Length: 111
Length: 107
Image (tube, rainbow over all chains, first blue to last red; front, side, top):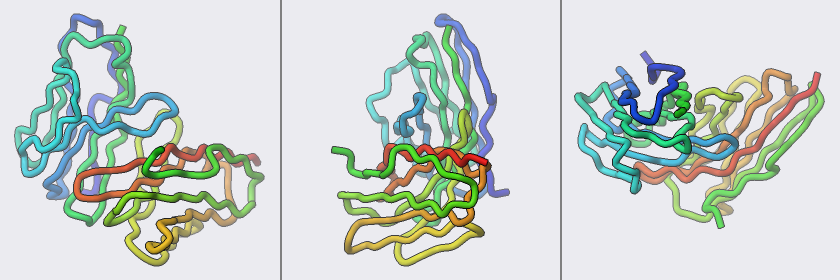
């Protein structure tokens, strides 16, 4: 298995909703990442988990809450989002410099 | 100034043309990725380079560490190559993304 699987692919949520994005990989990668990408912009790093511990939090608002239950799973819990949080959320994983693998993303729309 | 600069920002080519996208970086990196993203889609890693040259099908990527410069070449371009191509430098867990080159190949 050489993929990073993200679910759901599309999500529409209201500003009072609570939802979660899920990311899964079975390549044994020990670093996992959440990125946010707005249209026509490069991805922006949000969080990095290394060996299941949060190692980088790029000053992301607390309405985004990451969780790494085990070495294969990465979640992003969403609560009280704003319309400007609508974006493509990408998950990636890596192992040292052996390469990065990105998921296909979750297209989030906040209404 | 961005740590990773790409050129051109937009590129339109006729099917069959040879295409070159350039990337220059100003930070120390351990490797450089070329990434492809189709409209509305996820990112696919095309190459990871730390030196020299790599080839995969019609795609060729080169890197010159001394000059901090990399190029992505597409031979015999095809409409399905239309996408955004992003170069990204890597050091540790930190990615430095270029702003991307939007490529359109016209039949």
